[in-house]
Amino acid sequence: MNYKMKILLTFLDILSAISAVIAAIFWYRSTKVKTGGTFIVYVSPAQALGGPVGVGHSPQLEELAAALTKQSKLSAIAAFFAAIAALAQSIAVIIRILTAQS
Image 1 (cartoon, rainbow, N blue to C red):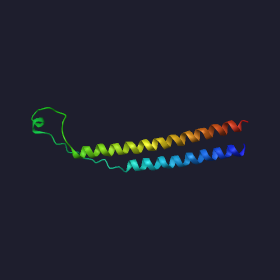
Image 2: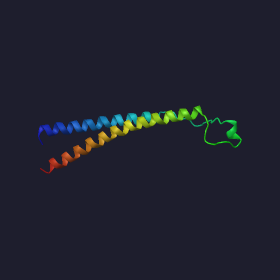
Image 3: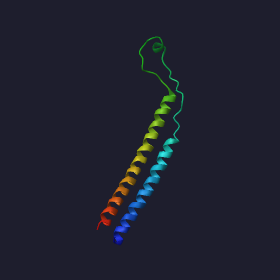
Image 4: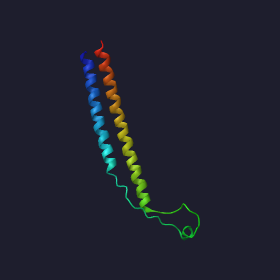
């Protein structure tokens, strides 16, 4: 194996390791987003007396929606870096297999 191939493999290994660490950090941050446990929903008197159902107001549910949106964004970033790590390692493995057979 020539030195250019070794440099490429080293680059792919480092890229994979760094990407995996970044993914882990973003997934960890995602777990730290507070989502709450109880949700008070305010309804109008018409709804309570059999009026239209499905409309209400809840600051806690709005906070939950914001928290879930933040978790989703953090998880999307983590998945992107996990994909980079997997792709880099897949390419490195294929190169190692192909060069070992030569």
